[in-house]
Length: 300
Image: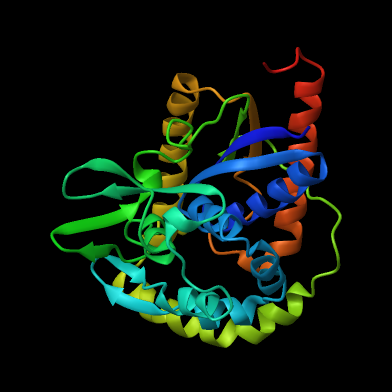
């Protein structure tokens, strides 16, 4: 009889791609995922898995190079964010049709933040893609979702690893995945990726946007001539620091039976073209975490 699992997938941009490797490894080791809850990228991967479409999503993600990622990013110079994220979700919808959350074969919830009411919202019904879009709205990076009088932003603002929001069953165990861990990172061996090729391909377009963006948000130069911290870097780094601290508190209050930790050094926020490496990192971290559990007393 397979061990049932209530799985919680945390937020973390492209590092959330490692969630795919986590799921694959858990299944290979005989676990049965009976419920899933996610925040931000965790809500996306968890939702796709709950809909039974992880194979299609993984195949598509592995096929993307730097230029593909760039072409999927719909930049906007809005005061509430620089990316709309509509284009990438349209692309995903082209091979994964939208579904109602309460009709999914696996119990699923997406965590979002109600910016106006300053509270956490757990979505357990309605459109899967609407829930995902709300949960991935990284403040000041991806534009928020406006619905009636509500403004929804990234669920990670209040609950980056929602161990207290996943549906539980008798005899299941709770497994949480933190993709913002402060653990050191050792690069796994994966297939060859021609990064130089993609660098050359995207260099022109990236520098064009960078010039426009830098004109609006210039980095200051220190007296010694060293470049200061740019706008985008500042947002992602400070967000990561906050996520790390909030995660510690949440995991202390609602500790999982197994905690799978993915280093924040794994990749940048939008390095989705590194799918092979990210998925492999998820597999490796899961193997290690399960190995530790097996050395302890059985979970009852």
